[in-house]
Figure 1: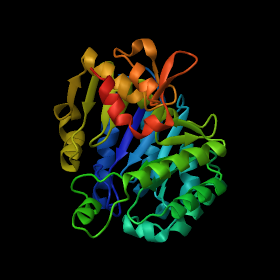
Figure 2: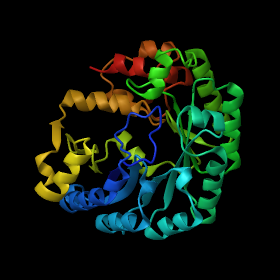
Figure 3: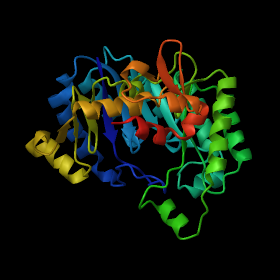
Amino acid sequence: MGGLYVHIPFCKKRCLYCDFFSTTLLERRKEYVEAVLKEIAERKNEVEEIKTIYLGGGTPSTLEVADIRRILEAIGTDKAEEITMELNPGDATQEYLRAIREAGINRLSIGIQSFQDKLLQLIGRRHNAKQAIEAVKMAQEAGFDNISIDLMYALPSQSMAQWKADIETALELKVQHISCYGLMYEEGTVITKRVEAGELEAIDEDEENAMYDYLCERLKEAGFVHYEVSNFALPGYEAKHNSRYWDGTPYIGIGAGAHSYVGNVRSWNPDDLEAYIKGGIGYGLQVTRESETLSETDRYNERIMLGLRTNKGVERGAIKKDVKAQIEAGLLRETGDGHIVATQQGLHLLNRIIEDLMI
């Protein structure tokens, strides 16, 4: 059983913090869809069964419903348990939401980031708080009962009061899943350049940690399971597709810049729109796809890196280094079934802990 990810790189406007592969060349969408369909035809048998499908981006909701339907029909959805699509609140209309539901999408991931208009403007989002709230309500009215929203914290000038208000708004909307990410200042992004120029001031580490701790505490209180560092779900609503990335299940990545993992081989398509379209339509994508074979050491290190991000952790017997010091320091703990998981304090230092346990 495996998953299939389709990357839709088109955006009407590029967010100021984003370093994912994306483009505002919306006029190339039709050509791109044709290339995607060709790659699906070539590759969907690489895993035994497609159980989860995820349309991510970029902004998949920039596509017309007819193209979304063509992509899903090419993949085949009969055995898919979860079909997720990312949605920008600015694209949400009742008609569009009902149409993608009828096309087969059964889970939405709505990129809200904040319910504060000033913060949305600061990070370059093209929707406002009212549209964000309305998008969730319209999705519910359209029949979606598995909705995830993205929120961001540690934004420049963001206060703890604003962050608490965002969490409360999310809870009031009664969504099933919440993904929360601290702002990362990626090299070359507009927001990073503005901080480096002194135009904006980054939140300090203590304040960021306080925001994260409050998030974890409040969502636990509200009945959410903290099943991965950045992900919280009501019981039974954990993201099946994303969980495949963390437990080593095979998956195929379709589209420009998309990555795949099958057996011990990782492969990826060029993060170049023109190269992908030409490869998909004219010459066969095998010409441009790159790959690497993971060694036993690589696979072990990935198991440590991904496993410790989840509430399942890693079997103590599978860890090749002594974890006694980290347990005594309160950074790791052993569960009743013999797994090692990070404590709340350990989550703040997780990258360092993972690095210490790699070989």
